[in-house]
Image (tube, rainbow, N blue to C red; front, side):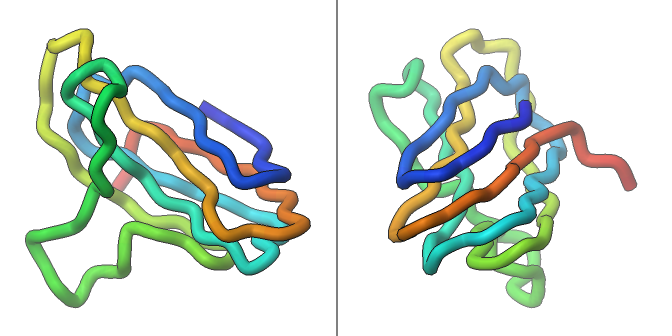
Length: 102
């Protein structure tokens, strides 16, 4: 999934879980890009956080960069990820979520 953010907004994608990566470049305009997950077809969203290793980077971006993430593996068609931009003014970000490659 590749998406261009110019305003505070979000984009959803179906996700089967596992390892992934969020990469983003551009002007953040003071905003924060994050990944949320939903197990109920997008009715409820929760920030996808890292819990294995406190030394790993936060699962949000406030400037160009990338981070890897893990989520549970599932065949449930109701599991979704959401990439959200909040708090931005004058943003122009190209963000991509894809399978994580080591």
